[in-house]
Image (cartoon, rainbow, N blue to C red; front, side, top):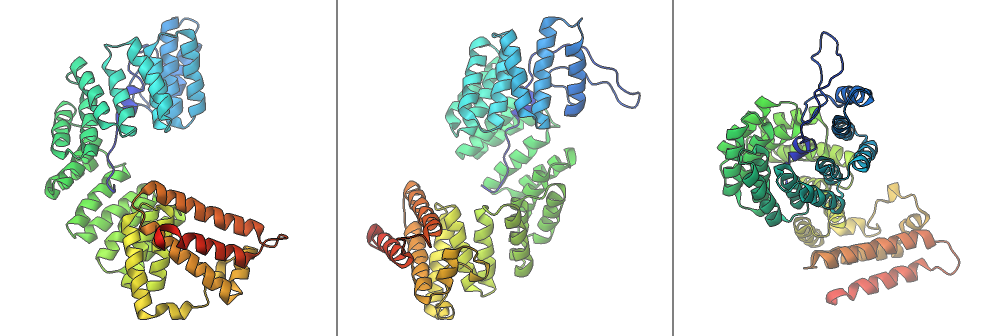
Length: 449
């Protein structure tokens, strides 16, 4: 999915219980930062405030534990996740029944992709405080991340039963409806969230993505503009508006928005989207330059490979297009678009006889070959032919696999063959030609090839 749809509960739900009122002294130029749940402040300042409270011998034990949880949240937001989890562990050791600590632990695990551990912590939080809406909201987000959208909606429903004015739960339930493809229901929930909290920028950009799915691009653009007006520091908001503008063939304005997104935070997806807009303008050289930059940032971003292949194809460079489509398939064997593109252009190349220009070339670029096995293949026309045939048959087999798991299995087998070829070449008893012929025979035996 190209659009960014966000689960926002991280900031709101990492700290939910009432916190202590203590604060450290600040300079006259800055307002004091209170170490308390939901305090909006730079992590460094919040850590400083909480540390002062924690180290104060007069602080009651319960307030000290709450301050430790708040400090743990700030440490995680600052990037010190290990320290944050250690802090949470210390809180739970001091009070094993403190549900807020389990919610914080679960949120940290969820945000770091440790979904099973997130569920373990969040289940405990719900058990300890079954009447706390925040526990169900946080667990709903974990179900969303696990793509169990119906279970997520059940938890959001319970959160809203317990707290009917819970804007965040409406917003995150809207994300679950969006992921299920129920776009009008998503919009209805985003409407409720915006009614309750009209200044939450991300809810607008999410609603805009849902409007776009219903073909209501003008409404989507209105929401994009609202999100950017409220918070112009988020590159995803500009990227989403750029995508909506590109859908309207308004490529110049789309490019201007991608420029802003890239200026705020260069990412492969933003560069790729700008490359797509340049393709829409038929400016293929600038499109390729953006795809090159995207792949420099993330060489495994398969969409950039596929879309650069399309740009090369428009320029008439079918051989380079074929190579880029092949790279996209290797990275994502389930990418049916890249597979179809590769199959179509391979037929074009064969029909036009373009392969005659590279009849002595392998599937890779000999100019950048570094391994001894690769250099041997480049230096022997028969080995080069074998390598080219192995690669061609492999890509055709992958493209025709109806089952993604089978495609991934075949891809791993191909990677294992290449790794063994590179490691074994030159060793006693290893015959490169025999090994390549055996690999070609194995591939041609898959599904009748």
